[in-house]
Length: 264
Image 1 (cartoon, rainbow, N blue to C red):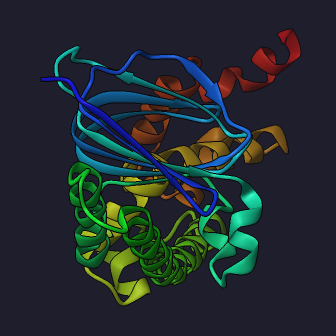
Image 2: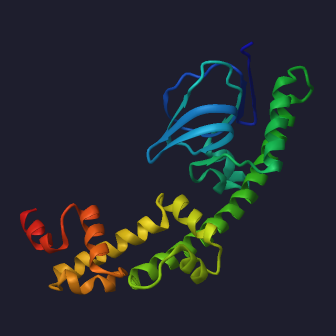
Image 3: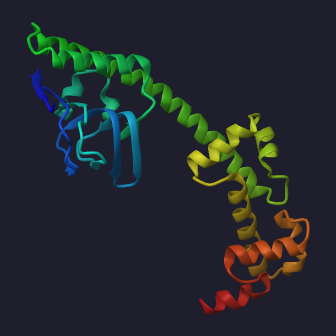
């Protein structure tokens, strides 16, 4: 059964719906918090495309383009909270909607508040329904503010760690740049380093290191160095390995580098 319940209180609008969603391009003039339950959808933004599964929370600032395309036309349970931007000006949580965020690993306290709001919306006959929804909304903002603050610190730490490794790789192409060696450099586990590269750069450590080494080798060749003399500087144990990797990456041999660049 498809149902839809709406409620507005103190400038905050709440919508609880089970009806199928129709994909449409949206750029709002208001902030939106969208909680989707057991979703199977694809989310498009100006920068990325993300497949969404399960419970997910979207924080969508005003003026942010997004297209939420639901894969199933069956029941699509969701809770939508939307409000003018100035509503947050009177709270200490103004930064909660400063950036678009997709949260698929929802904090326990936040999840409880979202489900509490759903129950409030479903109990249409409850007294002071608007007040209860508004109170839960304020608590939700507070929990989001705390959770996002912790996440920001973690993201900053992750970015600093990655910057440290990328700088080391760039400055030491001939060094041991295996996952184990880089993990030791960072005083972390090998799985942590592997995950860091995959999550942030989208490629493996080996692939990134290989590309860095070959681009460095190219710069040496263009500077006048003989390919057969610089393979060791690029972290290769023999010229044959360097030669094969170079052709695979650039599409031509190291000795043809000058000819290729002259033609392009």
